[in-house]
Length: 286
Image 1 (cartoon, helix red, strand yellow):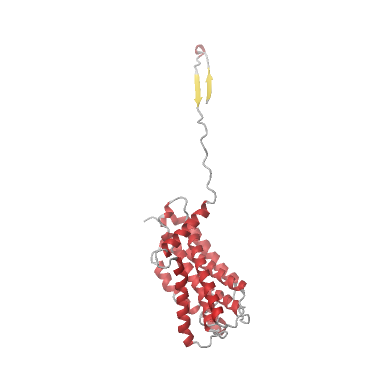
Image 2: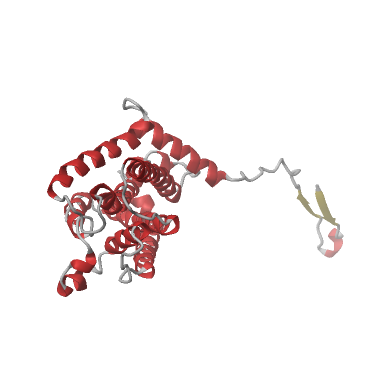
């Protein structure tokens, strides 16, 4: 407590002035939560796994088995029409080197795109940010697709004599670029879908041709020069090309550009974050 008093004589027109100021004793300080973001992301990841996979028979395991079955069926179907692949002697490994990086991009991108809608109720809490929701969905689905890729490639190499020479660094690079591209485009889509509900349908229509123009069934080098000039700007062509080089050392993948894929990823990711940072609260209001 602080007290100040001043006494001045009334005869001289002075008066008594008293000033009192009380300071409350300092209360207990709240310690900042350490690793709050990490705990939030982990909680969102567990929620993602429980909500998405916990309600189906087999749980999270089904998320790995289902793509494996789809790839096996497609491999059998297309192997009848393509007895000799465009590269190498084994169709399953040729097909897998194209479809697996595409599947990672498509699955992760779609999940990240709807991350805000999936966690909309939780984003009302200050401890949960839109970045946490994006990261959680990205990590869960990237790990899932990585497991699928490992099991598919491992199974094919064990069953068939593919006459390939896998190079882990190039394989990992292709998967990493696919995941980065999915995160960048998915983040931008998260804003567009929240702002324009019809964008989710538009994006689904726009990306359907990607399965045919990303080099899954053909080699970029075998296309006419006019087509190469257009298809080169599809970043998935670069991702698939790097994956093919990771299994076929003789394959000429000089046309691929890691910088181009990363540039597209960073531009989309930066634009998406900037737009969400500015308007994500308004977008989540019903």
